[in-house]
Image 1 (cartoon, rainbow, N blue to C red):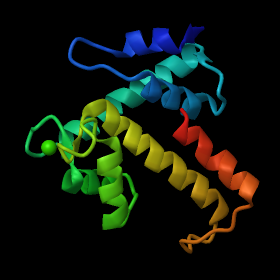
Image 2 (image 1 turned 45 degrees about the vertical axis):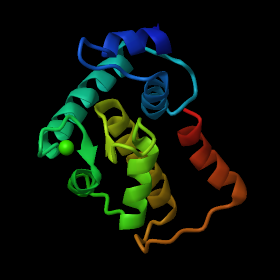
Image 3 (image 1 turned 120 degrees about the vertical axis):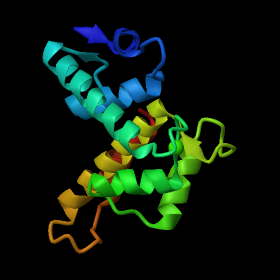
Image 4 (image 1 turned 90 degrees about the horizontal axis):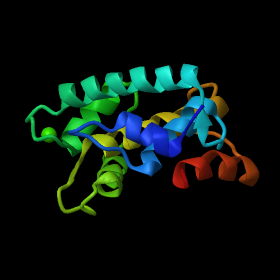
Length: 153
Ligand SMILES: [Ca+2]
C-alpha cells in the first residue's frame, strides 16, 4: 500500500508537482473513500489517468503557455462532455488559478484538480438527474455528503 505522501512523490516529476490536495482528490475518486492509502491496482489506474490528463492539457493549451485559460478550459471541458456556463467557467478559473486570479489561467496540477472536480460533481449530479433535465432534488444530508469530499479533499 502507498499513502498520500508517497503517491505525491511518485507522481511528481522534475517538471511537475502535485499538491497534497490534488493527491487526496485523486485518492478519493479512485477509492470512493477517504482512506489515505491505495494498493497497486489503484496506483496503476491513477498513473494512467494522469497520462491521459497530461495529453488533454497539452492538446488544449493551444498557445503553449503552460497554462489553461478560460477559453481553453471551456474547450477541454466540452471535449469531456461537460458544458458549463460562462459564469461557472469564470468561477472555475479564478478558484483554480494558483495566483489567486492574477494569471486568469490554470497550471497543470490545478487543471487536473479542476477537471476532476467538474467531472466528479457532474457525475454525482447525474445520478440524481436520471432524465438529464438539468435539475435534481437532493436532501440536505445527500447534498452535504456529495459536495464536502470535493471541498476538503
Ligand atoms: Ca494556454
